Length: 86
Image 1 (cartoon, rainbow, N blue to C red):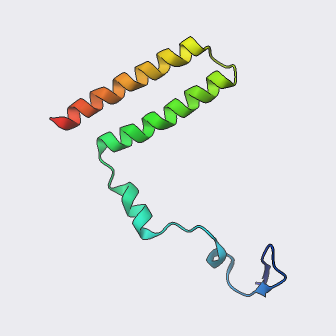
Image 2: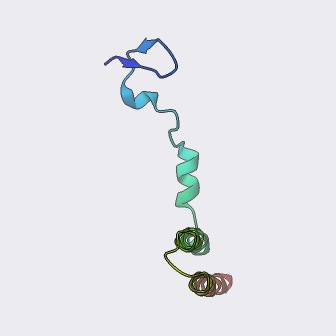
């Protein structure tokens, strides 16, 4: 299979899957597999806060609702952290 590389006039006969610029290394994959419960909860917390902030900025929820939702998420995160410390 011949593929034209963007920004170049060269063609290559490499398989398409070998031309991906950003492949995950085994180190990156391993790094995320070894997350403990708190680290996973922290990752989830960050995602939830991003979504809540986006909803507030988009006018879907009020600033007060966003604050209360984030406060609730933080409370849950603290619970998990406390359990992990035991």
